[in-house]
Structure formats: C-alpha cells, structure tokens
Length: 463
Image (cartoon, rainbow, N blue to C red):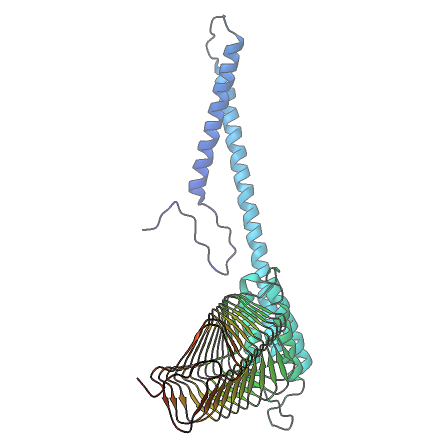
C-alpha cells in the first residue's frame, strides 16, 4: 500500500521538483499560520493586561476580533503566496534542468556521431567532445567513458599494408589513452575518472600507450585478452590502491611493459593465463605494501620480468602453475619484509630465476611441487633472516639451485620430499649463523650434486 505522506520517488532522467502534495502542504501551512496568529494574539493580550495592572478588566471589543481575524487571514494569504512562489521557482528550475539534460543529450549524440566518421580529424574532434562531456555530466560520466573504451576495443589494424588499415587511426587511439590517463592522475579532482570502470577487453596496444603516474583506486580496470605488441606500454610510477586491474589472458609479444616505481597498496594486478613471448616486463624499484600481483598459469617464452630493487612488505607476487621456457625472472636487490613470492607447481625449462643480493626478513619464497629441467634458481649473496625458502616435493631432472655466498641468520631452506635425478644444489661460501636446511624424505640420484658449504652433510634418500 502506498504511503500518502511520502514524497514522490525521484526518477532517473527526470528533473521535476520533488515536492510534497499540495493537499498536504496547504492545510499544514494554514495550521502553522493559525498557530502563529493565535500566539501573537494572546501574546499581545498578555502584554496589554500587564500594562493595565490594577484596573478593571475591559471586555473584548468586536473591532478587536475583526482586526485579529483580518490579521490571521492576511498572514495565511501571505503564506500561501510564498508557497506558490516557492513551487513556481522549483518548477522553473526543473524546466531549466530538463533543458540542460536535452543539451547534454544532444552533445552526446553529436560526439558519438563524430567518433564513427571516416575522417580521422573528425574522429579526434569526437574524442575531445566526449571527454569534455564526461567532465560536464557527472551523472553520465561512466557512460561517456564506456564509449571511449568501446572505441579502443574495436578492431585495429597496425599493418599499413593490410586491408583494414585506417590512416590516422593510431593517433586517435593514442589520444583516447592519453585523455584517460590524464583523468587518472589526481583522484581528488572534481573531473577525476579514478574509481570508474575501464573496459579494455581485447584491445590492441602498440608503442606509445602510456598510463604513467595514473592512480587506479576502486572500480574495475580490465585489460583481459588485450594484445601488447612492440614498442613500450608505460605504467611507471602508477599507483594501485584498492580495486583490481586485470590482464587475464593478455598477450605480450615483443616490446616492453613498464611498471617501474609503481606502488601497490591493497590493490590487485592479475596477469593469470597471460603469454609473454620475447618481451620484457619491468617492476623495477616498485613497492608492494599489502598489494598483490598474480601471474598464475602464465607462459614465459623468452620473456623477462624484472623486480630488481623492489620492496615487498606484506605484498604477494604469484607465478603458481606458470611455464618458463627460456624466460627469466629477476628479483636482484629486492627486499622482502613479510612478503611472499610463489612459484609453486611451475615448470622451468632453460630459464632462470634470480634473487641475487636480495634481503629476506620474515618472508617466504615457495617453489613447492615445481619441475626444474636445465634451469637455474639463484640466491647468490642473498641474506636470510627468519625467512623460508620452500622446494618441497619439487622435481629436479636437471638444473641448479644456487645459494653461493648467501648469509643465513635464522630461517629455513626446505627440500623435503624433493626428487633429484640430476641437477645441483650449491651452498658454497655461504655463511651460516642460524637457520636450517632440510632434505627430509628427499630422493637424490647419483647424477645429482649437493655442495653443502658451511652446513653439515645430512642424510638423504631416507624417509
């Protein structure tokens, strides 16, 4: 049942003033006016009575009653007139808002029409018009941004000799990317696009795509299935704070993707199932504080990922279930303080993972159930304090795990139930002032070599 005392619900796209019904407001206004007049009348009566103290009370004259009645009616009329003026003003404002909405809708239609034009110059004008409209129309800002993202998702031919190639199209697309990036620089600006959803699914990004210094806070940013081919795609100095940025199933072939000096605090960047072929991804000197970067199930074929000099404080980087064939992951000089790096269930063939001169304090590096064939994992000159490196149930038909000149002060290196049919584990010139190395339940074949360094030799091939 409808409540007659409730105001009309606001409808999207309408600007009619949200007023109480007249039949309810008018009696209320008259009642209020009557109460005010009654109070004034009795107040005046008490005042006159106080001035004539000691004199005999005089009867109320008819003229006084008439004056009071006229005063009340005049006051009620004034209230109703003010009510009418108020309602008329709101109706005029509603008409003005409707006119503004009509103008904004016309601007939207015009900009969308320009984006579909054959000439690149007209499409560029449409890009700027749509971006300006997004700034002027907060209620439909997401819709305007969706249109620009949808343009980027359209087929894009980079080969000038191909049939689908369009002259000037690259400049149009780079302009859209630049405009989006500029609106992500300052999350407190009135016209910021931070926190909006950005859908780049299946988009092709070539050289010149720049998101440097952007802030990704809230919302869903989706690069799933995107293709990064050649040149440089920049996310350097970007901030990932809350929300999620998806690169699920993306393809990186040639060129560089740069996240150097980026900050990850509470957000997630997901590369799960992506393919890296002959390209380089840089996270150099980045900061991971509570954030997470996932490469689970990805394929690295001659691709390289660099985390050199990065800081991990309660952050996570996950490569679980990934395949490395000739690729490389570098974490040289990285600092791990409570962070975690997962390579569990991964396959390494002719590839390299390097933690040289890294510092581990209260953190974990996990290679459990991984397979190493002709690959190398290096912890040379690394420092371990209260941390864990876990190779439990890993398989070594070849390859090498190198702790040469590493320093162990507490912590643990665990090769429990690992299988060595070949390969080498090397602790040469390591310094041991605490911590332990475990080979519990491991199986070491005759072709495998373990150089214990400062650690006492311990039994292998025993449960």
